Amino acid sequence: MKWQSKKAVSIRIDIISAVPQVLMSPINESIIKRAQQKQLAEIVVHDLRSFTHDKHKIIDQPPYGGGAGMILKPEPIFECIEWLKSERTYDEVIYVTADGERFDQKMANQFSLKKNVIILCGHYKGIDERVRQELITKEISIGDYVLTGGELAAMVIADAVVRLIPGVISDGESALTDSFQDGLLDSPYYTRPPEFRGMKVPDVLLSGDHKEVAKWKEEQRKKKTAERRKDLLK
Ligand code: ADE
Image 1 (cartoon, protein in one colour):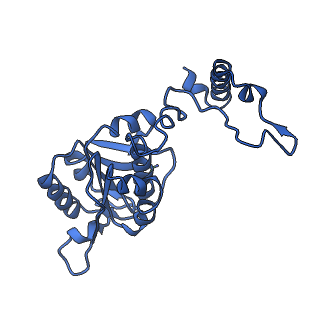
Image 2: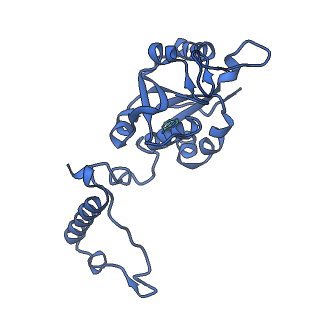
Image 3: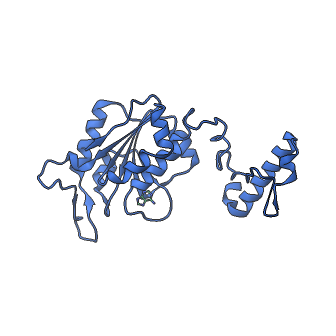
């Protein structure tokens, strides 16, 4: 089973999954939907079971040597990735896993410059090590906690990457001023009304003095980063 969006011009992300239904809602909503409508990104989901050849479409097996949980077997994964590679050249074949390298904004920026990327989602206890050795170019974790499968991690990565593609976010400035883009967290924001339930918008933001506003924002960013994420200031 495959779901395909419109033709891409900027980045194509192929996501391979044992539970592709999990991916459909975020792909067909959110920023990713908009990027696909604008033909700036193409996300193609592949059901691992469609690369099996047995009646029961078996994709997993117990691990050799024992242990709890099931392991995704190598054959369907090899078949799927080799088929994709026969169609186009891939810049990266990513496996999302809790024991991978930690995903961050810098990595998102790097991936946003790529043309074709595969993301393989693990499920159950993991995947056969031979897939990791032979096919995977990068192993990525979205944080120090264990998810049931890689699908949510794949969507986190796809979202963080796709929103950086020029034209996806209508205000071209806004991705550049995100938290982390220059190593600091973002400043607070206020909108109308100037006073709400006795809480006032800081005077400087109403002053019209752009230099003072920029100074205030920078101070706020440093203050918040020092309070919450000292590690970023190093
Ligand atoms: N699969 C399971 N846990 C994960 C995590 N933290 N990051 C990426 N993929 C995962």
